[in-house]
Every structure is written in structure tokens, then in C-alpha cells.
Length: 405
Length: 139
Image 1 (cartoon, rainbow over the protein chains, first blue to last red):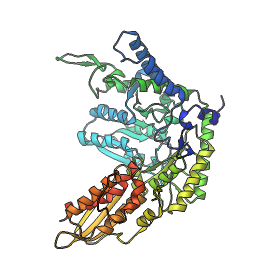
Image 2: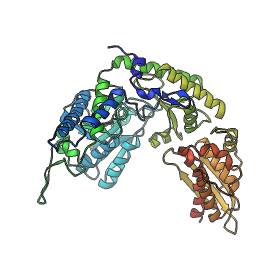
Image 3: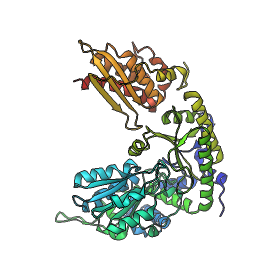
Image 4: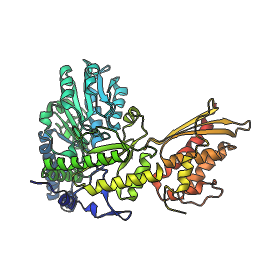
């Protein structure tokens, strides 16, 4: 295989759009990545030829829908190198974390501790705060280094015999820093704690071997991984999922319902109450196939080349990078600030140049406090981005400086 | 009127520091956050005997539109009572939605390019929300 960004870009119909008379330079992939035609077609094909509920009907469409839905689960499992019985479909990454917080969280006892970090997305903070309030737990918070990494040297100080779970971002949605997973897993194992990783920003960077990673839970969302919105994944180790009670009750998640006592289905169905997001799961399965066929070594070299071009250009323009300045241990998510230009105003001016980025606190307000910033501008790069996207962003930043700084 | 969101009139309003800062001590303090973007406006104020605003300052941590909105509010706030402050906010929101409004504050027309950009309306009105809050927090 070899990687051809232009050929890849041609698979994404969104790039035929023009924004304010300009070609689309989409650099907001960290919020939502675009879908290739193959994923769009898979969703459309499903709704045109196989739309029905799953796991219930015996008619032909129901058979097709169930096969497509379970096929998607198998595709996700293969991408993560785990058994498909350990893949739970959710409405998204947030829903997956909330599922763990409610279900696994119900097994915790007052005084137990959960370890988070300053750079977590709100979706990996608030569910645990709600749980802590319900169950009388304590939350410990790992600090962040000046270059935007979770400071794993603080693990010995914060992880102790009461620690039951360490829940951290695999890659930061703000700084792009990738977690030192081995250090976290070692600290957790030393005290018998579980590890949950928020993989929302890591999964779009290619296949992962969860079995080898040593963690216990992994969550991600479909729409950041070239799939539809409204679908996410919770992976949990089989024996842990088996011990967890249901979170939501309803159809599909039961063994037998009786007023004398209801029994529950084994995982993953135990955690998929009601009609699941079927078409979205089928789309995610197609996205996994799309990703599995990419030359990821080529993608990484391409993305890191663009990341370097971006950081060099921003440095020339006087912007300050919020996160690692180098390419080691990072994903192509680059946050930056510009003196006297608020990130929202910068994002608005960039839109006039056809450039889509995110400006704001990125649902990471504790991290903004850590760096004493109201927000940052964030450019996040995907395999279909090209040098022209980065150059358009840099021209827009120069324009914003000229007009506002 | 230019459709440029960052036309000179808005930039000049945002950079106007004539009512920037904090009154210390102040009879009332009101702080409003935009949870979606993290922008924050803090108003401090004193009151005259007739329960109207006599002095006001703003401390704004936000985008240019948010700063300009705070500058507009503080430049017009003296002499307002609670009802007039609430009316000013309602008028501004209605005008941004595209409605015709009588007696819009002088200078507010600089925000005309914002009317077509709904996602930025809250940037402008955050300071109006804080203004109404001054009358709730007055001790």
C-alpha cells in the first residue's frame, strides 16, 4: 500500500463544497471528521435495502439489519483486536463514559477514589463528579505539564489503595499530547485499580491493539473516526462487563422479564437497551473498513509533515503553541493562541478564508484555567488534509492579526 | 453598512476602555458566563438614591463581540433602573433577531453584521444579561 492524500481526498464529497467563495479547508477534524463516500453509501444502502429493527424480527429485512449491525460490531472488534462480545454500541463517547460511571460506578463504595487529569474533556470529568456525589467517592486530579501532557510522575502521589479507577484521555483534544499508557497501567495494576481510556482523539489515528495495551475500558465516538454521528463504542474486558449491572433497562437487554424478578442478557446486549442506533452502527462499521485499508505509516508521515508545517508557520506569525512543540508523542491536534485576537474571532475570520477550525475552551475548562487562557484556537488534521489547507490557515491567521491585533 | 463582522466601528467599540475595570468597593456585582465558549462579563456598579445606576465598570474576558457588547452596555447604563435595563436587553435581542426596534441605543447599529450570524448573538448579549443581574444582586 502507499498513501496518496489527493486520491484519498477525492473520496470525500464534502470537499466539493465552497465556503464563502473559497475551497473548503477543513481543519476541525478533532470535533467531527468528514465521511468518505463509502460510509455515506453504506448508511444509505442500509436505509434503502435493509431498514428494520434488529434482534427481533424473522423477516428478510430484519435478518439483513441484524447481520449488518452485528457485522459492524465485528468490524469494530477487529479494529481494536478484541472479541466482538466485548464491544458495546452506545450513542457516543459521552454515553459510553456515562454507562461505565453508572454501571461500574454502582460497584464502588464510599471513600473509593477515581483518578482523572486536568486536561480531560468535560465528558470525562462530569460523569465522575456526578458519580462521586451519588456514591460518596473522592476524585484525585493528575496535573498537566507546561507542554500540555498528563504528568505521570504524579501517579505515585495520587494513586493509592483506595483508587478503583483511573480514567484519562488517550490523546488530548486540546494539546494533542498522547498519554504514557504504560506508566498509568503499571500504577493501576500495583493497587488493583481499573483503567479507562477516552480514545476519541486516538482512534482516528488508526488501528489499535487494546489487548496489548493493558487497559480495562476504552471508549470512542464514531463521528470523529470518519463515521456517522450518534454512535459510539464502549469496550470493556469481558470479565468486567460480565460483573457489571445494567445501566438502562428496556427491550433487548433482558433474559426474561417477570414481575417476580427479571433477568438480564449477557454483555454486550445487557448494555444496549431499546432499539440501538442501527444505521449509525452500520456506518461506523464501514468507517472501520475504510480506516483498516489505509497505509497508516504513510498517513502518519503525511499528517506529521503537515503538523510541522503548521507549527513552523504559526511560530513565524508569533502564535504560541499550547501543547507539545515537537512531533513525538502527539496526534495532529494543534492548539495555539495569538496576542490580542480571541480564538472565536480568529475562527470567524478564518471562515471567511474557507478554513474551518475550532475556537474556544474545547470542553476542557480546567485545562484552560491551568494555562490561564479563555480558550485556544485548534487546528486538527486528518489524512485527507493537504498543504494548501495549512497554508490557507496561516494566511487567515495573518489576516486576523492585521485586522485585530 | 458593511457586512464585515470586524468592521472598524465594532473593533473601536471593543477597544474602548473608558468603562473597563472594577469598581472597588461596589454596591453590586454581576457576573455572567457563556457556557458554550467560556466568555465571561463581570459588571460592578453603584446606585443613586432613586435606584438607578450611577457608576458602572466592566471586566470582560471574551471575544471582540463580547467586549464590544460590554462597552456598549456600560456606556449607556448610567441612569437606568431595573425595568429600563431589562428592556434594553430585550430590545437588543429582538433587534439581533431581525425585528424592528424603536429607541435602540446609539452605537448599537455597529452590530448590524451580527444579525445574520445567530451563533454570535449571545456574544453581544452576555453583557446585557449581566446588566440585568446587577439589579438582582444589589445588596
